[in-house]
Figure: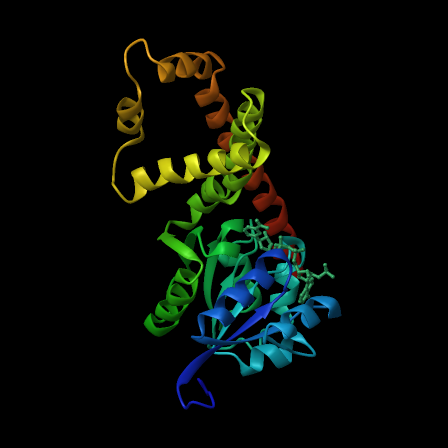
Length: 281
Ligand SMILES: NC(=O)c1ccc[n+]([C@@H]2O[C@H](COP(=O)([O-])OP(=O)(O)OC[C@H]3O[C@@H](n4cnc5c(N)ncnc54)[C@H](OP(=O)(O)O)[C@@H]3O)[C@@H](O)[C@H]2O)c1
């Protein structure tokens, strides 16, 4: 643990790969005031942007990792195993969170056997600290490493420990899910335009309506079927709307979408980890 000017112990986190997810993770951790963050990324403009926010940049991955109490890998899946392999000595005994979709704990353990590994699948709402993040932990991980990794993941939103074999399903649902929800928001906003609402009212009412319905489920613990019942009146407006939504087969199309995304993730997992096994030999 490093010490700040105020003398408070602060956990030092290295983020390797500061693109969409890594850059946002670095920013969220830095802004919390609970972590010192150092990022490493080949793109200088990315490092400069983060530096203007007060996030340190490192000249290379090894320099960043050496300073860190915990390391977050947010590089693309096709380079994740090789990036971890090159740092195996520096990662010895350190908690490591990998965000790389489809790269198994086993593939990472083969190349960095002494790292304390956690595999996590956040979603893009991490940018606003509202991710749903499924994660799984390597067998034998130490209690301190696990607690620190969970503390860091909680900074990004809600977390759920799942068996690793369910992470492809997490990817298919909450990993890809913001895109599905965005389509629904866009459709509602367009519908608002069709019935004459001004653009900003249409967009904000669409997004807020989804947020409000989600809060009824999450905060007030009301089942979605009950939320629906709370709005529907016999012969009223909502039942007319629901009639048309049900006719479109929306439920089965959403189920097929998550099924297809999960299956695609499983295919990618199989091909990338086959590659990783041969790289590690
Ligand atoms: N985006 C999402 O919604 C999401 C959600 C969950 C999980 N993930 C996972 O998060 C990871 C990052 O995704 P992303 O969307 O943030 O990708 P991204 O925007 O492409 O960011 C990856 C960054 O890592 C840099 N990089 C490449 N090789 C590196 C290396 N060896 N060392 C350090 N940095 C390196 C890249 O630089 P160059 O571009 O110059 O190569 C890029 O800036 C992926 O594994 C993805 O599966 C993403």
